[in-house]
Length: 421
Image 1 (spheres, rainbow, N blue to C red):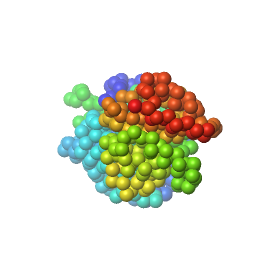
Image 2: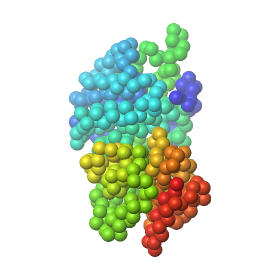
Image 3: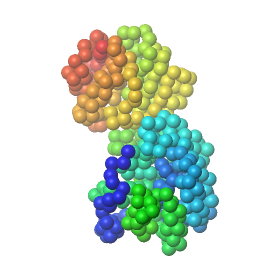
């Protein structure tokens, strides 16, 4: 789960602190923190929150800002006591929750973890709530999974989220720092001292002669205590940001609910499906859920996904009356669902993927397609500034790469619709 050696420091403390790019990094003053009514900090393991944002939490204590600490892994008794002691030394009166997932196995429990995160955020959500989570780029499997799932949950509801790194300081170099998204937390001498005292509470994790397998070396602790505390803005790809903006500005960006062209095209797509009923279907790029509602009539179970959280929110609302539909945020092809499907629908989305991304997606479609299953492709044949390829190119690539016969092919001047099986 950890793709680095926790006992070997790649970049010494003085090199980190002497990096000239710090001069361009903005500082988050304590006045910024005072603008929040509550801070909810997620940590994969007891001590993550203290290592990453212990100084910030100490400032919360001094400013009387309520703090909720959510630990994703199990309550292990001794480490829980250490965390309670650390929070007390930080001066934080925090409510502490353990989600009881297996240490080192968060990626195997993503669905249950997602539900736990949603429940915690729902109970603590407010217009002035700050959410903190481990940076997904931290190279620890649990940190990566937790950060990603918290980010998805926050994006869906518009929560204010910032990431904090932990092991970056151990395995990384200044070149690994996402500088355009970095900000530094203002720490006073008193908050640094509280952080130092708090970190000494994690006796089971401290490396010493009596505990040679402790993962927190003296050098690592010195950096955590005396070095900078930083936060990262969540990363959003230009394409995802584009679609987020479109769906936030309009509940129907392409007028698919009202234009006859769009309504007719959906009807043709549904009519082209050879089977009357499908057991498990996967729709890639669901947008506001209009096609999802139509597919729900023909499927026992339908998974509809989109990369934009604003689209997911719209599709979730649109399919609220369809109990057989599950809507999720997913960035295809980098993310992909488990299991097989006897129907996979790619409508008006393939041309937003670069050639290599679409090639990867085709491979994953083929690996997920059940015996006797069908793949429906439907794309406009025109051109747009945000297309990475044309609709015709996407269809040709699928046909050439998959080797599957097109059993239905409907071509018009404005779009092409094919069913492969």
